Length: 233
Image (cartoon, rainbow, N blue to C red; front, top):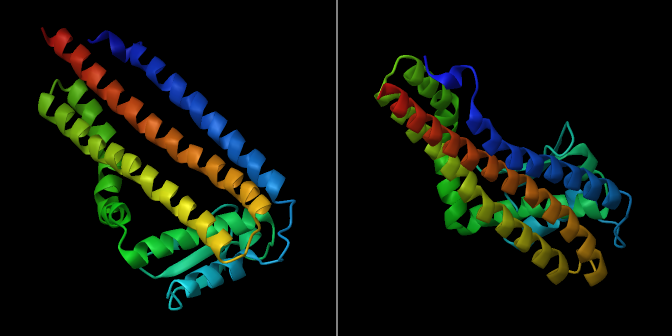
């Protein structure tokens, strides 16, 4: 029986990604907490910011509505609804303004047909399917010495990794759009933009961490497949 059923040395590959994920979570919590206590001078709530930005880009048909939870904010391209957590929807803090503008940035991306977003939206079902089945198929293949299942698991997980990689430019572009819109429309002053930018930059680290974790997991799969091959020999 392969030795990695008892000890899997490839687990060490995940340590840097885990550390990065913990750092990203702490950074988001810290920035959001800090700038949730700083009110924007114009007093726009997250809901009003989203509405202003959407209307300014000809997206008056996109609804803005509150949803439960913390940082559950998202834009739903199928329903054409921008949903903001209640802490963002009703708040006029710099953190709320930044988050609302970021989600409006996704709606603008959708409206102009931003290619990476279009690709990501169409790729979501494939990525979800791959994430769900990849590891079970992979480990069943290792256990049964079936190279086909092992390679199929790797192929499926590669799709999930691609999704995470494509997500990075989509999120970074939405944040850039958000900051540009907030300043150009006079919703935030230049010194306030810095606070909103810190919140959005912190949030971006979570996507970097997710991509890093996915890449490391794929490397683990490849290393385990190599070990499996050597055991077979």
